[in-house]
Image (cartoon, rainbow, N blue to C red; front, side, top):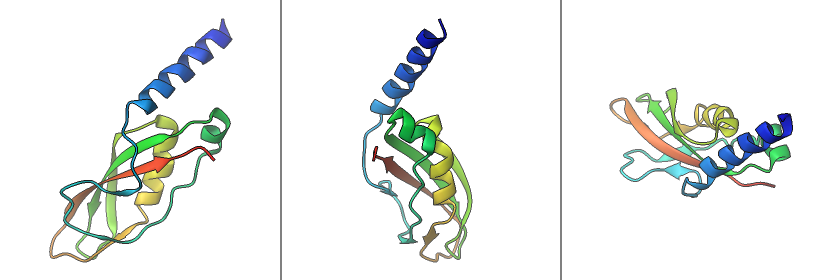
Length: 111
């Protein structure tokens, strides 16, 4: 019974991952600020063991000086979300006169 539940959970997570479009880590369309410095996300050990891959979409609130003030997950595999938000919070954007909201997508590919 436990194996069946684990299999079903893995199947659901995999299906959710497959529904997201894959693209490299980049600002989504309509972004007004360029990324000056990117920190790549660390591929989580659990994701490696489960052979998970997919896209995580993150919204970043960026200060005028280009540092990330806060992040909010818009979608993606829960196993990959923490790594994606940790990476995006370290990104640096070009300076701007005011705070902006930037949406980025990070793609995780099984190694």
